[in-house]
Length: 152
Image (tube, rainbow, N blue to C red; front, top):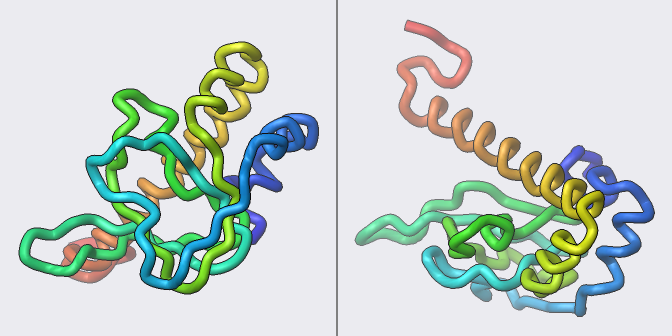
């Protein structure tokens, strides 16, 4: 993936190298929950292999999949914004290998180095903007009379 929101495209090499000194390797079996909506957002992940689905609780139904994420993509942005609670849930759709980061450590690094902090904030902001746009398009496909491209 070459999106501007993937780690390899979002951060300059020096910033990326600094961030990549922090993670630990994490693995999730297919069907494993990475996090639940409303719970404390104290970690985030970058997918190395596999697919993660972001989902939203729907009362009386199975969670609705909002988006799927793959290699190089950030899983979770709620760790960056107070009150640090997940806005969605996440589930491994296949076996997943990821880099896991401690959110508090990264936030502390951002506070200590404003340039690094700005780079992380811009990256996370781009991820949020991309996901909001993708959600809007999906909602239009579902609820607009003629899909996302049509007008009445």
